[in-house]
Length: 186
Image (cartoon, rainbow, N blue to C red; front, side):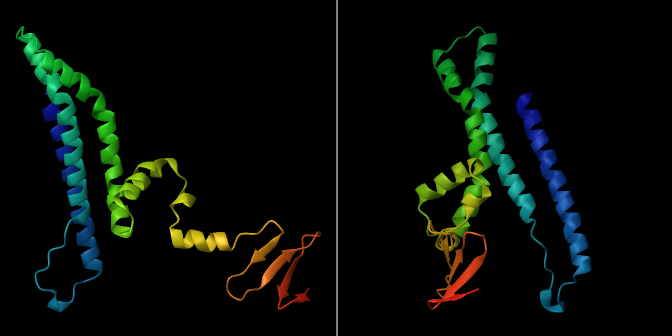
């Protein structure tokens, strides 16, 4: 019964997203007509496909974790007790939350892999799994972080400007002075 309800609910989500995306594409197409040489071009339902794939992964996790619970219940009702089923049940049932979390992280992993082909698999997994625990400032790529770090104020109160080698200094009154080529400009 639970398998049917979960599958039916996921199917209803899929249908809703598909209908919504079709309506959106219909209105977008009427606002921006296709060129005459486009022919019989059918738009792809990208969001619908992503939702369907993600939904199937969630259903797979649900089936994996609850299959042995169902088998155990059926066997118990028949008066049969199988130790191996209980062992597998004890292992798989607590995994549901972990599997759901991995599936939740999956789109982020795919996005990172597409944007950063140079990252190793280990680093991709690390970034995807640690993303919910990091701030948005931590998601700045290495090039941007290097530029930010090189523009930070030093301990002496001097701030480096990468464009021309000018230095900006704060005097004791809080006024900013530009130092260019050794000359102090007020």
